[in-house]
Image 1 (cartoon, rainbow, N blue to C red):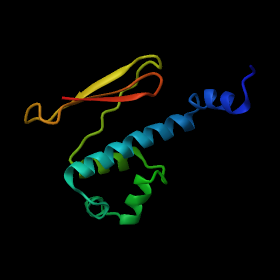
Image 2: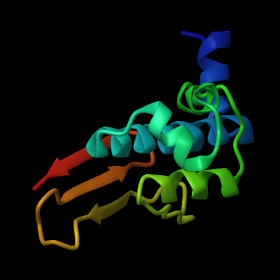
Image 3: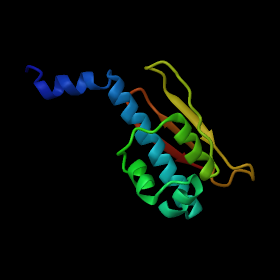
Length: 123
């Protein structure tokens, strides 16, 4: 059976900088939304914290903007967080553990495999 256009395109899309940038943006905005939920922070609260409009925050959370590292850092600080970024081999399986300074409460292991399959292990 021959490979169709869609299958060929999907197989090569992951090799494009645009795909990788979109994946990173999605990972960040999902983490941001999760952190906001944990803090019971609204979009308006976040907008006030970074000195922007709620509409701007909505654009970020909806993936409708290409934000800078400085914007990411400001957003992370606004939710009392920090960004951890590492470069590794494409075939490496990555796993990290986030836990509170107060002990093991909320500890979780999170990983993204070489096949972009995400998984979370709660403690």
